[in-house]
Each structure stands twice: as C-alpha cells, then as structure tokens.
Amino acid sequence: METKTVVSALAALAQDSRLAVFRALVQAGPAGLAAGKISEITRIPPSSLSFHLKELSHAGLAHARQDGRFVIYTAQFDTMNALLGFLTENCCGGNPCSPVCLPVCPTEKESS
Image 1 (cartoon, rainbow, N blue to C red):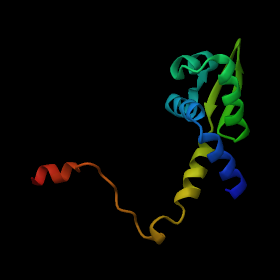
Image 2 (image 1 turned 180 degrees about the vertical axis):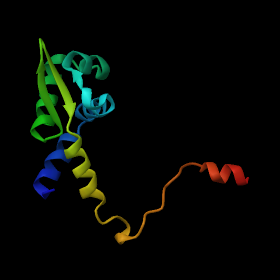
Image 3 (image 1 turned 135 degrees about the vertical axis):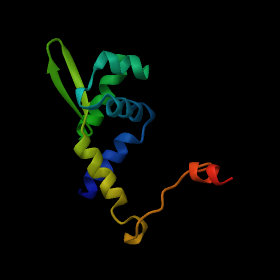
C-alpha cells in the first residue's frame, strides 16, 4: 500500500463520525447497510452522513451500490486489511509479537 493511500485512509478515519460509520459497516459485513440504517445506528443526521460516506468512499474505505430504491454501503475489506498490513508490516522487528491481554489473562486467573 502506498503511503499516500495510507495517509488518506487514516485521515478519513481520524474523525468521530466517520470512524463510527466505518465500524458499523465493518460490523455489517459484506451485506452492507442502507444509508438510513447507518444514520439510525450512528445517530448521524442524513445531511451530515452523506458527507462522511463520501469521505470514506474517496479514501477507498467504503463502496456504494444501488439496490432498488436504496443505496447500500459496504466497507472495503481489502483496503482495511491492506491498511492493517501496512501498519503492522514490521511489527516487533520481525519477531513474533506477544499477545496482549488486559487486565488479567484467563490463564493467569486459573493459576491464581
């Protein structure tokens, strides 16, 4: 993933409403959500929601498709996974990362 694309995606996600919209789309999975349902879930007024969806689309994080009278939005999982891959590409200097478990790992509870 190119740095310019990464910066665009991170900039789009660095806003409360857009992050909430993207998380709702990720949770919905490949089926996506109609704009009205996104508005209902996120409590973002439709007039503002269209702006945020446009920004996510321009960053390659969301895609719109027509389904009858509705516009269905889906998360672009390829872009999301490429972004995560870019961010973790050199994680831990190439060594396996230890899982983080807070506040107490289940194995620690068992040994107590």
